[in-house]
Length: 507
Image: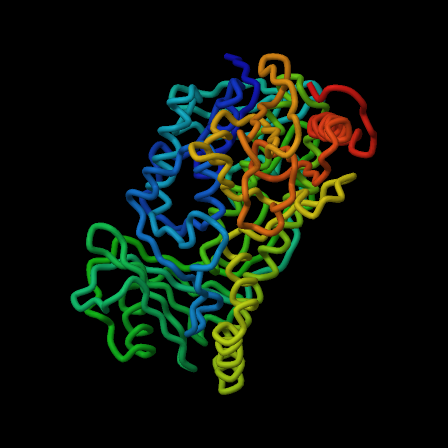
C-alpha cells in the first residue's frame, strides 16, 4: 500500500507537533508519524521560556499553557545560588513556565489535529529514501507495513533519529564526560518555595514542584564525572545523594520515574539535505541545562514551518529552505556552547569551583547587564538572524508585541501565519489588497509612540511569519519605502534577490 503527503513529520513531540500546526495553518497536507502509541508520561522537559511563549502567542495558542503552567520570575545558570532575574526582559512573559512536556505535547497535538494534521501514533519509520523528486518513507504501522511518498520529510525523531541516519547526515560533537540523575518523587517534608537548589563540594541538586503532589529532583555529584554508564538509577541512590548535599532527603518516596542523563553534545552537520530536514533533538543534543532543549526545538519548527509551507505551495524558491540551516545551525551550536559552559561551572567540586561560582553570582547581582545577557540567552529572546542585504539594526531581530493602536497589538495580527507589512502612520501608507499579496498589511491610524528606542523612528517594517523582522526602514519618503518593501517581500520568498533593488508596488 502506498500513500502520499506534502510533508511527513517523523516524531510526535513538541517540535514535530508545532511544525505540523504551522504547516496546516498554511494549508499543507501533513502527516505526523510517531512510533510510541501514547504520549510518554515521563517528561524530561519542564520549562517553557519566554520566546517560546511568544511563539505560541503569535498564533494565539498560549492561553492553556499560561493557565496550567507555574510561573517562575527567574532562572538559573549552572545552578548558581544567585538566580537570573527575568523581570526586566522586554517581553509580555518575563518568566518561565513549568509544565510537563507530556502536557505541552498533548496541547500541541490537539491543536495540530484540530487544524487537520493526520497524526498517527504507533507508526514506526523503518527507512526513507530521497529520490530527488520525492521522499519514500517506509512505515511499520499497527496494521502492517506501508509506504508514504512525500515532497519533504522532517526528522523530529530525537537524538537517535532514524531520519538523520537515512539521510547520511553526520552528528558531530563530543561524547559524554559527565552524568546527572533525575527523579520524580513524592516528598513527605517538601521545602517551601517554587524552586530549591544547593551546590556544595559534595554535589549539587535542584528541586521543583510538579502537579499531582510530586516533585522533580535533579542532582549532579563528583561520582558523575565519568565516561561509563553505571546502570539504572535507584531511589536509594537518589536519596543518598540528596541527603549528602542537603542534610535531608525531604522524606522522598514513591518514585514515578528515575533516570540518568549525560552531557553528550552533538549538532547535525546539515539541517537540510535535499528533501530531508532535521529539527529539535534530531538536529542537536546537549546537557539539559537551563531547560532550553524543548524551546530550541520549537523555535526550529517555527523557523522552518513558514519556509517549508511557502516552498510546497509554490510561493517560494527552493533557496528559501537553505536559509533554515543558515539561521538555525548557529543557534544549535550556541546552545551546545552555553550548556557545556554551565556543565563545567557546575562540575568543579572544589574550593576553586566555589570561588568561581561566587564570582559569577556577584556579577549577576552587581552587573545588571550581565544578568540581562544571560537571561536573554536562556529565554531565547537574544536570537537574531543575519539577513543578507538588510542594514537596519532591527533586521533579523525578533519583533516584540508592539502596541499599534488602542485596540491592536502585533501578535494579534500574526495569527494567520502570514508576513505582515506595517506602516507606523508616518507616511501615506500602501494600497491594501490582501488577496493579491502574499502578506498582510496594517496601517496604524496614527503615529505610535514606541517605548523601545530601537523602534522609535521606524516608519515601516516587514515581519516574517515567525515573528522576526525581515526589513525595516526609518525613511519617510513613500517612493523609497515602496521600493524597499518590494525588495524585502521578494527576498522573503527568494533569498537570492536580497541584494536586488526592485521598483514598483510591493504587491
